[in-house]
Image (tube, rainbow, N blue to C red; front, side, top):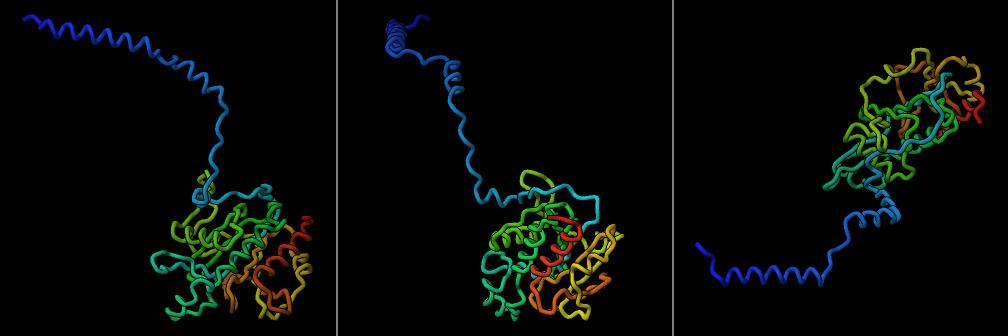
Length: 277
């Protein structure tokens, strides 16, 4: 069967017009030239991390390697770190933002002070004692009995709002890792805390109500240099700590002191004892 003459002529005309259009509009340069041109262009800067990216982990603070000498451990007892659903979201309860919510549930807003834990952690982790590698660990036991381990090289957020966000994430996910790593800087662990303490350690509780008032410099100077020290400090607004694992209860001032200032006195005395400047 032969093709119609008109169809064949149309095909030739089409191919010829296509050839003419290619001559009028030359082809773009080969891909190789494009690649070379893009290679010469300067590399673009990476976009700055957003606040959401920063919350995916916690940065690590620079410090010396853990010392083989005697170390110190801090335990913050009765810390007010409680999460509740307020409205449509879960939040870390505090007396400033949730006073009406707490009163509605017959709770005293003055007892909800997570800022005490925040200030205490900053005092411990910012100390030259920690930067010199003599801090072994920090443990936090909440009013609800949740035990939290804090690594000494974690960088705690400076503002309370960011700190509250980190604690909320920790209590919901049970651990927080370092940025870009799998190492857990904050995590909830099983009770009791005594199973994580060194065998050769002296466990000392602090209480303003103690009858044993001491000068902190004199007190630590009499402790053997090859013994680890465990200091138990209350992280609550009112009351005193009651533990069954402390061997000594001392008062370091004749006046009531904040938990953060008690820690400052302890770290200062140990820095003078161990010649840390």
